[in-house]
Length: 110
Image 1 (cartoon, one colour):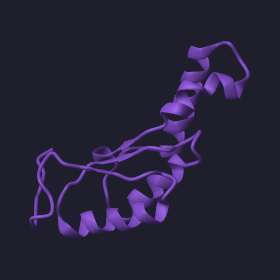
Image 2 (tube, rainbow, N blue to C red):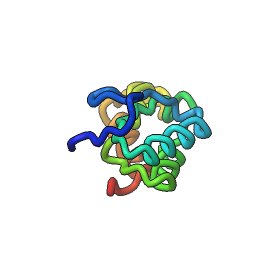
Image 3 (cartoon, rainbow, N blue to C red):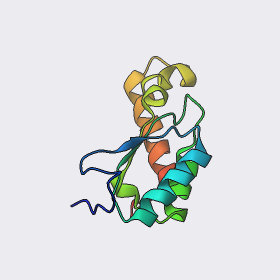
């Protein structure tokens, strides 16, 4: 994907980080990026264990016309420690289940 850049505020290869626990800020930035015509990848941590919702993040990006494929929704603690939440010693099985749940919440990446 080749970045489209309009204005001096953005340089190709530079993205943004916005926590999933800050949905209003995510919506505002996503709207700004889309309106500018620049493709700005966003790293969105904080899903799962930190309280953010992958479903909400995906809905915000879709509502602002921002293709999900440009962005990374992160749930590292939610996946790494899923075994504790599930109360199991099956680390791998719990991690896989957490990943599947995350993917279901996000839905299709258009």
